[in-house]
Image (cartoon, rainbow over all chains, first blue to last red; front, side, top):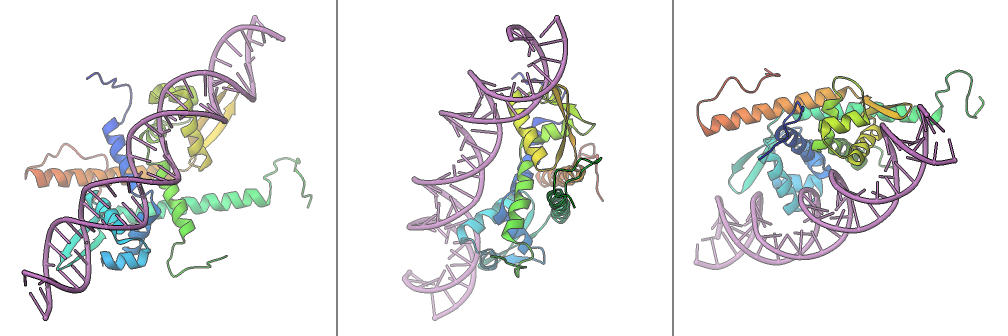
Length: 126
Length: 126
DNA sequence: TTACTATATGCGCTAACGCGCATATATTTG
DNA sequence: CAAATATATGCGCGTTAGCGCATATAGTAA
């Protein structure tokens, strides 16, 4: 078991956990489910309706998120209610959304007008 | 064509962009590269050495991160220096690390009642 | 020019992922 | 008991993503 243990500051294991956490947020359907849960817990059936996904898929996604501790699970009779258990999700989404907006704005600006330092401007002469 | 503002607060397109952004952070090698850039810009070769990855792979990952606006690119002679251009990365990693630590602590507590106090720090969010 | 270094890219392979389908499990009701 | 509803799961398929290999491009130096 020769692990190189190179001058890395973060363990491979830790890196893997962080990556896995991010990967859970890297799917539109899961993000949709999370977003649908932003205003409180909902049953699987309700989430199926809101997300437009298959019952099987929604169930699996919710399970994944719950196993990771992102969602909480409450069983009541026949139904299972999921809710956001990790409040950091809100901040994560806020951060990403803000960053994306900034990038979109910058890209749009770069599209409309060339930065043109000095006097050299491509064309679009005023 | 347009869905101006669907009843959902997030459009499918927005969800896709958010998911793609998260997916860029969902790979251990990319996280390793980002972490290596936390203390300033570095050349590809240096990052290859620090990450232990192949030159081709490192180059591709850096390119992906740069295209997304997460990294900045500066070319100087033969070398190309990458640096973190999106400061929200720091907060994202902090949030995820903190959340993961909390979950680990809780899992450990659920396992055996006693828990250590030396672990899980560096963030210690209230 | 040629040789050398640093970085990027095309190609192919494999593993992982998300999805749909059908079915299993659990709980309530008659 | 059986039937109905809500949720979970096994299986297979198609797509995608990361990796390694070899090679291409760019810049430097002799």
